[in-house]
Image (cartoon, rainbow, N blue to C red; front, side, top):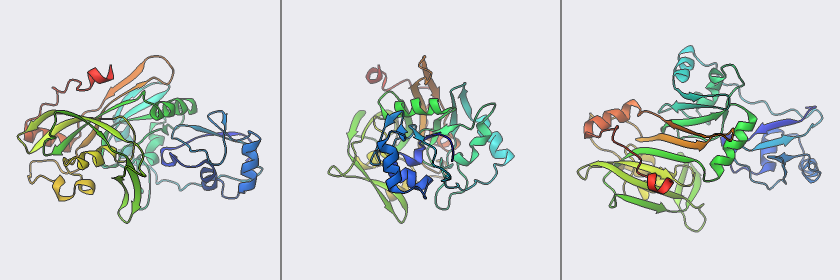
Length: 327
């Protein structure tokens, strides 16, 4: 590599140390040389000096100086996207301008690849290049969470959106169905979460000693007796599986969430949609250009529409249960 590169930090590298990030991408770069590059200011994160222990965040941009023939590790090539998948993805575009593309991520599609996952959004992003460069991931949703997902169309946009998501300027509203009805019409769940890797994949658990701070707000929009509730959710922090873990912690798991709710997350009925009932309904963020805001809403996926019909919920009567807090 004989020229400077500006590489956006992907969502999968969020909270990774800078030295580990380099080892993944440039395995032949020695730690001693990396330390020297950091000391002399040739390696920078968002334009600022950094050392090997610096924690990276999705959307930040790492300046990589010329490394004299040390090539970046080749990434696995994603299988070609089918015409059907490409067309479906383009039809899911909710908003597009020179800075961003906002899509309605489908239920069941992983954002990035992993062990045993070959079909994922990251491998399909060439379909959304349109007349510009391939868009970049700056945040993520769980595989089985549908709804609003924003993509950056440039390095500058990725950096600014990354700053937005790391701060408190982004407002992410979710819709979900809980098994059972929360005791309060509106509430706040303040419970630190610790991420663990297990045989069944990534999972978080409440841990006030070693976990990272996590805060979620909820509001009951409607309910079906004591059987289920339609809830609006607002995560004030962005931890992995935060809303799912928090709702399970108060004994009202998200419908279909076997990972955190077990058998208690199911309602026996052939008329209820199958799958996780958590949907990223609305995203409000400052525009990365610095002018105005982006405010996008995604329609309910098919399996959640079935459940809304079954319980008689009216998806047009949502309003904004957090308007007073957000204003």
